[in-house]
Image 1 (cartoon, rainbow, N blue to C red):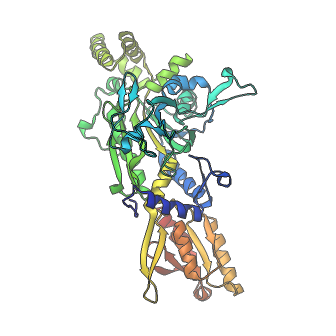
Image 2 (image 1 turned 90 degrees about the vertical axis):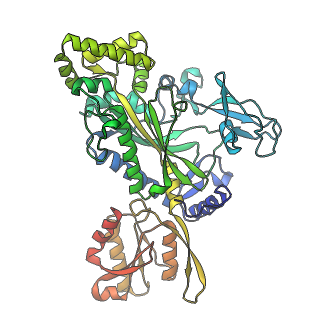
Image 3 (image 1 turned 135 degrees about the vertical axis):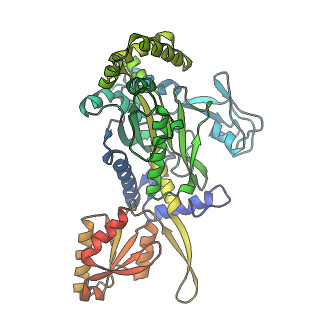
Length: 534
């Protein structure tokens, strides 16, 4: 949880954090020498390492440590039909409103929210409630809310006309769906299995705000986990495990789980990972979207939220998206997205006609209640009886930049100490988890005018550099060097002193407690490694 909350909507806390981030090389305004460009940020040496460590930790947890997930690295620009099939070309929009007096532009739902009101949906559009005013000039002379598509449009090739128009991707997920058949054929995985991808996405936000939280260029880390429809699970196993059956979500996933259990499993997995990289449980919240908030294709969606200085906001959404995405691409491309399931075919072959008829009656009725037509419901059953179906999907989708901001907010601390003369002294420290800290250890020679001590320090620095990103600092008093490392979140400072030359030990100082202990140089890599891997 942020250690510097205040009473001004988090502005003072964000100002302190952004000042440190610029001073210590975490985050810079993009194109700053030209006045900057709103909604775009550059990550400096410390920020680049932090984001890389976040991505690596996510990839290790989601892909490398599992047998049922593979990866993808797809292009940012895709065929424009992708965005027609996904619905982004026609429906990926936010409501925009302008002040007619001062010309200030807002996202209408955010403008209402900041004044304790709620935007009204009416006749397929939006309507501002009474009393909503411009935050800049106080005028109530506002335009009617209108739809604004968030995708960045571009052109492919030398001619700029509608035939060459496409978009920068607003999410990474669609490439996983369009490449599903290739991945399924080449990865030698069977349903249930997942495909993970991280990368850049772009959304032309109406009102970027709250530092890096809402930006126009950002990174996502997304998983599409493909599962059998519950009807296929029932045919194969004779039952479908639901949450009412109290499944063990901490154990290994089970083949007879239904979509509800898979969804809850991934919620728990994501919470587990956030805690593992240092975000405290008490600062994380689950928001279960209500029925009228869900996308029309979603059966459930949970937002994992974090207590930012400016309020509780979303870090990640975990959605049960049914078979919507693959079915849409099947419809628009004309390519079947069905998989053949040997276990399903074998189970159906063992059924008698009476059992099949009863199953079909129940399934058709249930499908119609979920919005499918009679023909679609019957085609679905026919496919199941042949061992075929379009997989359903659970989607955990996280924002890398939002997570980096949450981690920085959580880590930032100002600690009042008392110096040797009894005077109060404020220490600014970034309490980053060692696993994601940009620098794992700093090596500090106590003095630089003793050749043998300096050479020994360089030797230790090169030893540690083989394992992690480390920092060499030989300038200034040792206390000032410690403080510089505190501000970039370095968990350990290794001081090479005169005692090192006698017994081959070094002083290791812990960032958070400032405690120091002597460690043998021969044990240093394993000593630091144990803490970094925790």
